[in-house]
Amino acid sequence: MEFKEDMETTLAGLTSLLGVNAVLISDREGSKTYSWYRTDLDKRDVRVAGEELLRMLQVSQGFGVNSNIGGLANIIVRGPKGVAILAPVGESFILYVSADKRANLALLLVRIRRAVERLLRMLGGGPVGGVSIGP
Amino acid sequence: MEELASVLERALELGASYADVRVTKSFRTRMSVVNGNVERVVPSVDLSVGVRVLYQGVWGFSTCNSTSKDDLLEAISNAVKLAKAGSSIGAGRIQLAKVKAVTDRVELEGISDSREVPLEEKQEIILESDKIARELDPRIVRTQFDYEDCVVERHLFSSEGGKIYEINPFTSLRFTITAREGDRIERTIGRLAASAGQELLAFADPIEMAQGLAMEALDLLKAKHPPSGRMPIIVDNKIAGLIALCVDLMATATLASVPESEMGVFYGRVGKQILPETLDITDDPTSPGLPASYKYDEEGVESRPMKIIEAGVLKGYLHSRETAYKHGTSPTGHARAPNASFLPVPMVSNAIIDPRDYTFEELFEDVERGIYARGIVGATIGRFVQCKTMIAQTIENGELKDEILKGPSLRLDLLKDLFSIDAIGSDYDYLPLRLTRADEAYSVSGGGPHLRFSQLEVI
Image 1: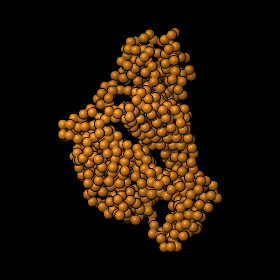
Image 2: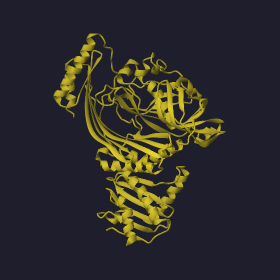
Image 3: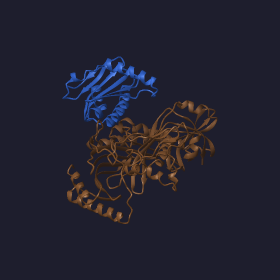
């Protein structure tokens, strides 16, 4: 329970932001470590899995290197209904956030940056047990 | 708003050959954060209305702050009186180049509307940028962030049947970071600006910029003075942008029509080689996101990219309808005004030097001893540009040295020194600027690649 509460506190800046629908953390093996969904969201609407996040990150990291953009800070995917963002958390974890059009993308990126810093302090480099909260 | 068009008939009844009504409604938020404290938040809504009539070749212009029919009819009457007074002393020669009357509506497509973003959200982004800069080092003694966003709704109705509504977004964040060690004080300045809403703060990364400027201010505390005299210089995109903007400005039809002025050096030189063959410069108000981006100018002429310099040859001037007629050409979509209280005049938008093929590393390869200058602290512009750069590094035997120099002051005669450009980079970035003339202020930008000068004067 302590881990779940710590996680909730760490990610409160993200989960409290208008428009944020889902926050997932996966390890680099593709296992979901933590997930949060907005209470009125049907979980089936966000179907990304840890393996998918991992695959996306691997492809983008390679693309980032080939594009000479100096590493990968985050991946932003914009669609007509909203935005999905992936951010590496150190060497071991991936943070995924999806939000609808009401979210302020600039503020979302600021809060993701802050969350990544906190997650790094909290998770360090090693994997942790899976916890899921939400509806 | 459509009913405004009907009052134009009154101008024609009073004898005007042409009339237009422009309405500008600006929704603006300004905010200043100094050392982590929000010092000023000013939300405002400004309405300005301008009525312009052409009577026997003379302009009459009147403004008001209301769109009521009575106020507009009074403004039209005043404008016609003014024009009649001018024509009675035989001043009238003005005619307008013909254009197709357009009816169009241009909305904020795919761009966030700053009016709908809570102030607290904007504030949080700025405070976070401020925090990152201040926490970097105790020698960062002062930070200042000046934020502005606005959404401008523009209406134009003309007696020729033109009816245009266009909404333009703009967001800007100016950073001033001061570092101090003992008696030495150094300051860095940066600015992000775009025709966008919060997208600017999402994609231009203000946190990264605040951090970068703070690090440069700290670097400058140890910086040596640069050498002076003529030497090889490589300038970054921002300095290249300033150069592009100066050339572009001198190509505005009004300035280029005054040969006796220092800014009138392009007078009578259309079609002539005035700059090196390697240089192409374009003025482009159609680039989405750049600080001066619009679909229609203040006379309802659709904007288009205009090649000012092609292979060093001056291709033409930036025109309004009036100057286009005078020069026997077509308007270019560059009639601009800060708002409807000002008469539209030919004005630059986004000046761009076309990139070529040198990579960043290749630019340095042939330089035995020179300077790489970055950023701008201030500049005086005209044919002779004097530019105080922000920071510099020495180049030795084709390599960029780590040692930081204070930004040198560069002096250029645009018509001579641009011929010493011997390499043009393949990259691109732009410098957002605010061009002020008396009480008029225009958002403009200059952009381009890194440029290498074989010789340039450092003063």
